[in-house]
Length: 117
Image: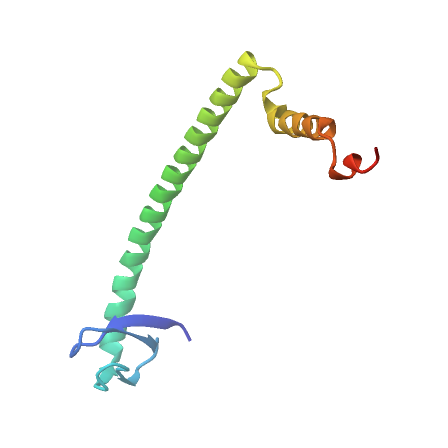
């Protein structure tokens, strides 16, 4: 059975119930809630329109996300193109820095070289 979320008429807190006609106890105020076939029909009717609204919101957020991702990709590619034009080895920057550090460290005398004399 599918679960639905309703609000307790006494304490106005949300509670999850099964989608079948029965009596349910609110977990917050312990009030017994009678879920009748009439309330079930109304819940199904309202759920249909809430589903349509949720679908529209999801489609809108999907478009916004795709637009933002495309814009970020465009800005990144634009920046990369500008940097590649100024310095063709821009993408190798970190590798070059590590290599320069290795070369500097290789020129320094080690601690044990002092005792070899």
